[in-house]
Image (tube, rainbow, N blue to C red; front, side, top):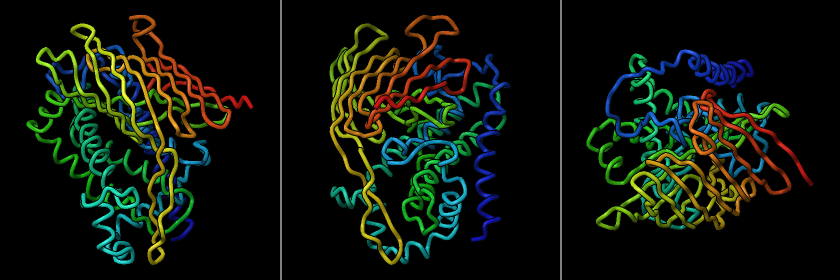
Length: 373
């Protein structure tokens, strides 16, 4: 692949972000009055920070939570990552042939093994089909509310762009056949879009399972220029009492936390849970020149406070080197004004403190980056 092609590919990805940023000043606050399955017009919590830019950054940079490399803007593999992913998804059959169809289907597609080295299908189903499908529907509803033409087409483009960004970041600086991106982009993300295009399926996940986006309050730092505190996370709650005051609680992203959620009143709930988080990427044996990865996991626990399933505050401990401790306070907790700020603090191992502020009037927040060792 020529250097000119790589440069053009990287140029296009970076300018896709600029395109979405250019939409921001024209967002219409007086949107359509409709009932949506996932999008809410709340001026507080995680709902107040949901927009196309946050979807792109949280989805695209989510994998930095488990990667042992910097998230600075100049370290993002704009050219090589884009080239590798594009070559793999536009010519997937030779890559799968080299990797082996039996291994590909068992490891990436079919739910036949729970061995961590052979269960890449788990995040494919949960994060790409269910989580990615819900985000597609929710951002489509966001576009519809704000009066954009062809909102579901824009939603699909945003969802696929976020997924491509994620795979490009995960790929890194090397150019090689990439097996991991093929099922994610070509199979599971499209399945999610197809599933959540159905009103009946969207209604089930919205009303019965209370599926929602509880992503991080993503931010940008300027010294150095980098995306910070990004992560695409989801929640489901299933009521286990007749009064619906107590629910099973499942929080997932690059982690899986199971616990209980307790209603304090008709709107507010406190949830607690524990589980496993990804703390790093482990390379699997290379098959005919085609590498693949799995994850290493460690313990994680958290406590969460939400209002109408819009996350207001969370505090977690994790074995992940990129998030030993994290406190997120979303807009609407400090005050109820339209300029109510949110705050976050993340302790990164080894010895780095990331802190920042979010505002509803900004597409993403502002952050500091401070080594303290």
